[in-house]
Image 1 (tube, rainbow, N blue to C red):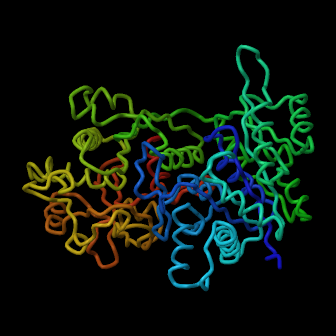
Image 2: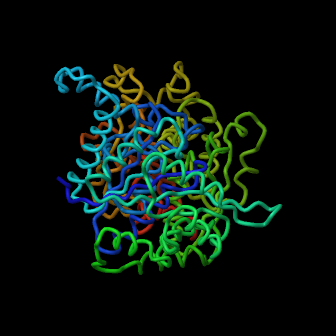
Length: 532
C-alpha cells in the first residue's frame, strides 16, 4: 500500500561536486513556497557511521544537529535554505544502514532467513525513507544520493529507490555536467548522455535532467539532450554558474521547476511566496559596500572546512545590505613567524576565530585575539575561539603567564581550559559529551542578552574542553564577563568584554543555527559592529 507521501530522488552523474545538495535545497525551498511541507534525506555511501571522525580537509565541514548527530555538510545547506531543524535520520550512510540490518539479524528479526542486499538492505532503506516522512509529517520527501552513477558504493541505494518507485509516487531528477571546452567553444552533451545511459541500466529513467554548465543551456543543446536521453525538452533544466548560491531557487523558479514537479505528482500550487527571499537576494547582489573580515584558522586552504561560518556571514551581512569580504589567514604562519599579526590583520573591520581541534595554530589564534582586544576591532570567537579568548585574557590581563588549555599543553601551570572530571571517562571517538543543542541562561544587561533578546537560548556544541571553574573568579575580577552560562551555572557558554565595540565569544557553534531568512543573532550583531 502506498504511504501517501511523494518522493523526489536526486542522483548525480559525470563527477561529484556539481551541487546536487544546493539544487535539492533550492527545489525544497520552492516547494515550501508553494505551500507544501518537505523533508530532505542525504545518502552518503561511505562506510563510516557518520562524519564525526572525518578530517575536514578530506570531507569538508562536519555539520552538527540539535540531537548531537555529526553529519555531512550538505545537511547544513538543507537547514539554511529550508529553515528546518532535522535529526540524524535525515542522513543515511552505508555504515548506518548495514549496522541496522546486522543488529536485526543478531536479534533474530529475520527468523533464520539468509540476509541479503536484496531484499533486506533495500527493504530496510525503504522503511527508513517512509519513517522519516511519517515522523516529520512531510508531504514531499527529497532524497539525495551522494556520489555519481557508476560508483560501486551507491548501487544498493539506487536499487532501493528503483524498488520504491514500484509502489510510491517518485520523481527522478538527474544532476549532470555539460562542459564547454575552450578549444571548441561548444557545450558538450556526451558526458550527460553516457551518465543517463548508466542510470537507465540500473532500471531508472530520469524525469528531469538538471544540467550544470558555465552558461545558460543553449536551446539546441537542450533539444539534443532531450532527444538522446528520452526526456521532454521542458524537463531539461539549466543550472549556470552563479556567484550567489541563494539565487539558485530564483533561476529554477524562472524555469517553472517546482510547478513541473507538482504537475508530475498531480498536485497544484496552494500559494506562491518567494517575495522575502527575492528581496534579500537583491540586497546581496547589489551590496552597499564590502566589509573586510579576517577568518583565522588552520584549515584555510580548504574553505569548505568553514562553510557554515561563511554562510552565516553572508546571511547577516546580506540582510543588512552589505557583502563580507573574507580574508583567510593561516594562524600557523603567525606562530611560526612567517607572518606578522599586524600585517595579517591590517585593514580588517572584524576578526573571527573559529572552532577546531589540536594544538597547531593556537598561538597564532591567541595573537589575533589579543590584537582585536587591544585595537578595539570587533571580534567573534567560536568554540575553540572562545577558549583561546579565555587564555589570552588569563595571560595578558590576569598575569597568569603560561596559562593554556590542557588540550594544547598538559603541563601548563594555569589550566584555564580543561576537561571536567566527568568527561575524562570518555574515550570513544564520536562520544564527545557536549554534542548537539544545549541551553544557556544569558545575564541581564549584557551584549549577548541584548542580541538574543531573551534570557534562555539554545545553541549547538561540539567539544570536550571547558573553562576551568577554578579560574572563573579571577577572570571576572579582572573584567571578563561570562554573559551566558549553563542552567546549573557550572559551564561557561558566552563571554564578552564591556566598553569594547564588540568583543564576544561562545563555546557553542551559532553558525549551525542560521538561515538566509533568519540570521543567527551573534553573527547579525557582529556584522552590525563591523559595518559601524
